[in-house]
Each structure stands twice: as C-alpha cells, then as structure tokens.
Image 1 (cartoon, rainbow, N blue to C red):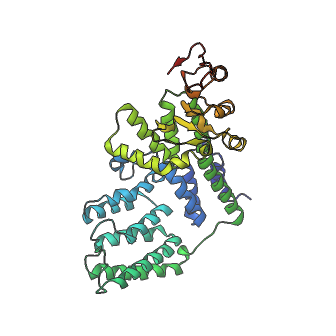
Image 2 (cartoon, rainbow, N blue to C red; image 1 turned 135 degrees about the vertical axis):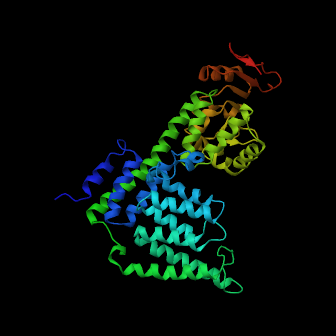
Image 3 (cartoon, rainbow, N blue to C red; image 1 turned 90 degrees about the vertical axis):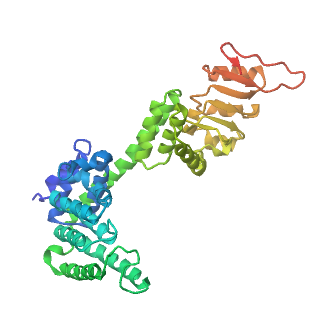
Length: 405
C-alpha cells in the first residue's frame, strides 16, 4: 500500500525537473504531518539555495507574503534585525507571523530572536509576539533549543553584579526578565502535549529522505565543483578574456571559496575600477591563501609578489624539475593560466610534460636547440628571453615569429 508520503517523495526524485521551492513545498507537506528532525534539516538546506536568487536590497519591498516562504524565510532574520527600534521590530515580527505558516525554519528564527533580541532594549510586546509565533509552530525541536538559550542566559545572569538585569542591557527592566522566565516555564510544559511530542518518519520513508538529502548535498558540492573544473579549462584557453574568469569566480563563491572574491577584486584592479579597500582586501586574501591556491605546483616554483594577475597565477619562476617533482606537478591544471615562465635550461623538461595552455613568454633558454624545442611545443609563443650564453658558445637564434624581449 502506498504511503501518504510517497507522492511527495516521488516529486523530490527528479532534481533537475523541479525547482527548489517545489522541493521545499513537498518536504513541508511531510513536516506538517510528521515533524521529523531530518526533514527540518533538509528544508533548511534547500531554503538556503532558493534564497540566493533574491536580491537583498529589494527584499523589503516584497513583504509581507509576496515572496514564497521557500525563498524568504532564510532572509527574515536580517530584515527584522535591521529595525531601528522596538516598535519597528514588533511590526516586522507581526507581519512575518501573518504572512507565513508553519515551517521549521520559522521556529529556528524565533529561537534566535528570543536568544538575542533584535533591538536594545527589548520590550514585553516584542517578546510576546516572538513567543506567540514560536508556540504556533508546534515544533518539538524548539523546546530543546530554548532550554539551551535559558542555560546560556542563566550563566550570564549569574555573572551580573546585582542579579537583576542581563549585563548586555537587552532587557529594559525586571518585568521583561520575569515575563521571559514565566513564558519559558509555560513553554517547557508543552512537551507533555501530544502535538508537541517528538516524532520520526516510518523507517522506510526516513531512509528515502536520507538518500535524497545525500543526493542533494552531493549535487550541490560536486555539481558546482565539476563546473569549476570545466570553467578553469575555459579560462586557460581564453587568456585575454575576463568573462570566463568572472563566471568561474561566481561558481567559487557558490562553493564558499574566497578565491572567487579575489578573482573579482583583481579584475577590478586591471580595469581601473578597484577601490582602496578592495586593493587591501585582495592583498590580504593573497597573503592568506596564496600557498593553498598554488599547493599543487608548489614543489616546482618560487612565488613572487606579482605572480597573480586577474585572480590567477600568471607568471612564475621554476626552480625544480627532478623526476619526483614532475610526478607531483605535471598534471596540475594551475599551469594553464601561466603566461610567463622564468627558468634555468635544466628545468625545460617541465614545459614539455605539463600543459602551459596560455604560455607566451619564456625567460632563460640558452641554446638554439632550446629555442627550436619550445617553438615546436608552443607555436604561439610571443617571445623568448635568452640567458647569457657561455663564452665561446653560439648565440641562440629565435625561430620565425618570435621577438626577442
């Protein structure tokens, strides 16, 4: 016999055919029947993805109700905390309570706002509005969450000198604190009611949700990572073009990789649109992450101050090319964006085995044979800088098409 959840889970199977909002709606339907912790976690993960499509500066204009809760709820905390005073915060909380129904993320939001009120000082009316929404969620997880909040506040209370006010001054007087304590006691008592007891999905259904949650997380992690790998190759093939770099930066940002921000900052420097703060930020990111960004080729190179341009390693000095080093670094995609290389002739073999897709300038060759080999391997070289030949040795001649730099 088909489970009442089967149709909803069936919709979730087709990741590419349905939007994040539709997936959340299906999970919310399950949650409203069985508030399982696993389903709440799944809804939160999907909601973060859906919320990325919203333009935060215009978010305020959409409330209340015009934006689906699937997308809006992850942004509500910032909107409420942006209130200028307790009256405005209260109005926004009430609008949220009117606009959105039960959702595990909404109860998490209320817990966060009760734990750290959105304005200083808080008021009885604001706390009452937060408690009312939280109790309306009938989320058994919230009882444990509020227990943690109370323990944290109790420790802070004991550190206070007079034992009457929170040290951070969020409560205007004892009445607010007393009301909070009474509300907390009443809230704990809800755990004895049937509709507030912890519930778990049937084992078979829960296993399916676990499988779908893993598939979703893998899709987010490896899907974006796969696109990043493809885009890196595109960047290498289009050395002069900033557009692939900007797209690559967006994908890295999606993966929470600071390299994405760094790429955009350096492109702004190149285009003359950077700011002083942006330049400082770029330097700080490079100082912090340069070793990580070049770790795959680090055994073979020596980094210099200006080796990164437009977010990528553009020039380098090769200092090692023994067999063990070649095995470690030859297949690294990082070589693809290197335009200028400085090396001793004995390290020339690295240029023969690695893929220097963007290579345009080589400094340090000493013999006509080196020039010939490089010209065959990299026919689109812009130029060679020749190292000083030993006394009595013939001066290398550059092949046709190369200019001596």
